[in-house]
Amino acid sequence: MIKLSAATIGLLGVILALLHYAVLPYFDNRLNRVIAANPSPVPAAVRAFHESAFVADMHADSLLWGRDLGQRHRRGHADLPRLRAGGVDLQVYSAVTRVPWGLNYDSNPSDSDSLPLLFIGAWRSPATWFDPKQRALAQADELSRLAVTLVLRRGDLSADGHKGLLSLEGMHALGGREAALGEFHTAGYRMMGLAHFFDNEIAGSAHGREKYGLTALGRRLIPRMEALGITIDLAHASPAAFAETLTLARKPVVVSHGGVAGTCPGARNLSDDQLRGVARNGGVVGIGYWKGAVCEASLAGISRAIFYAIGVAGIEHVGLGSDFDGGITAPFDAGGLPQLTAYLLAAGLSQADVEQLLGANLRRVLSTNLPD
Ligand SMILES: [Zn+2]
Image 1 (cartoon, rainbow, N blue to C red):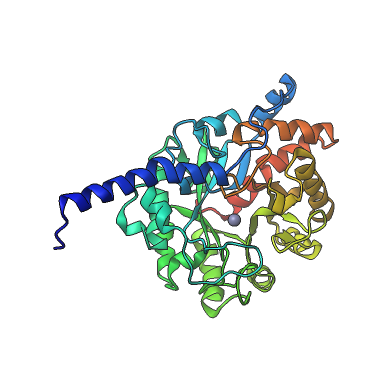
Image 2 (cartoon, rainbow, N blue to C red):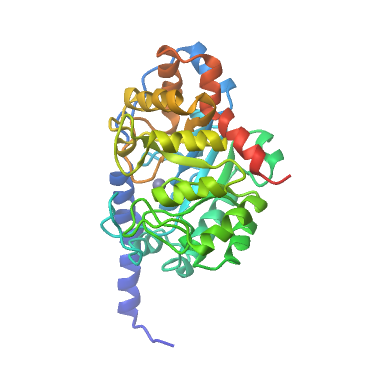
């Protein structure tokens, strides 16, 4: 046993309190900004239409920040009160488990980890401080404690009230172990992104050093994920891994959050070929709300990307992928989503098309993939 003096214990206590009450909220607030805190009013008829539609968002990192998502917060983008206000029936909650220092879209090392301070500052178990797998399991546990129906099987999609589906952002959290897939499935994970910001044991990342395709382990895991009812997410995948997965996939995939190069060129955004590939596969692409995805973080910018994606892939293959609380600046928070519905209807999209975009497309993919 290490013996700590009272003074040392006191100092550690002060540091933990500072991290929890000052440093973490400061960065949460600074990294997850909202441009228009007060949403513009939405016509009552549009709001009623939005409420009646099945609304699903394919990607939010809200679990990461250690906020109690049962309460409404003044910082960040999404919590249950704001998701309900935004009419969101199904939220895909993604677990971020490792983020390199000096994060960028071009090239990140695979061995860098900026998250220990966040997990310590959120007063999570020491097991999570340095371990991506434990970080994912802790976030799954936190979601399971909320008043949310966790979507584990097809039937859960039609449960009343707000539903949450767990997604793993980057399969590095498996630690290169094939057997870990079953452990994540048992923990409730039903969607997995092959890679996040760096190349891993499964696949290369669009933002990695080498950007390789699928590894031998990655090729073995694709059919295993499909057999378990885990939807494959190609967001952040390297172009080589993206193309290879589409040739191997027998079930529809998603690209949970991002943009299209046609309105916003860059490593984060899909080429027309990639859009057509997802359409052929029967999958769905989630359009994000931030500058890196749509170049202009506004209703107009998001809408341009949506119309472009519909033009190339078809309305059946486009959805919403906010990336709320993913370290982005968004034009509105989760409660402001009806504004996007109003904007798209005013821009000429039919109610039937808006319903597909808002959630029917994702529901189709998930009901194909989820186990009975
Ligand atoms: Zn992401």
